[in-house]
Length: 102
Image (cartoon, rainbow, N blue to C red; front, side, top):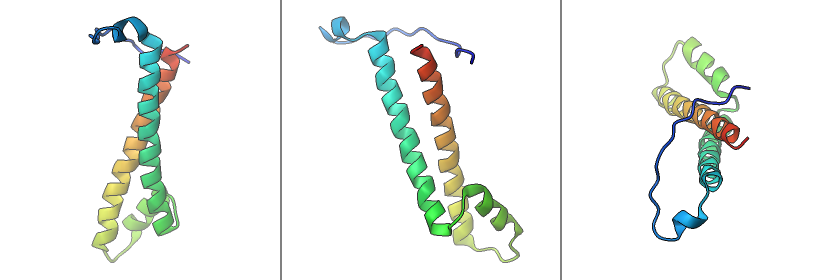
């Protein structure tokens, strides 16, 4: 698997934090944040899966095929899609950060 394109940044930390925090530790903190975002978005997706008894793809297909528009379901579809996209984006960020630790 290819390593992500890296960008060097400068971080200024107060006092002795600069002496004790390594770049690996900072990446680990970012990994934890990314994982918590994945878990958050994933849990919101699971709420919709439980509510409708199906996954997002099936729900989207059903919403597109129905003749009667149910606006609350269309609203849920839009929100659910946002959670799906957020989960996917943060999973990608998590994987990129993991490759930085190699």
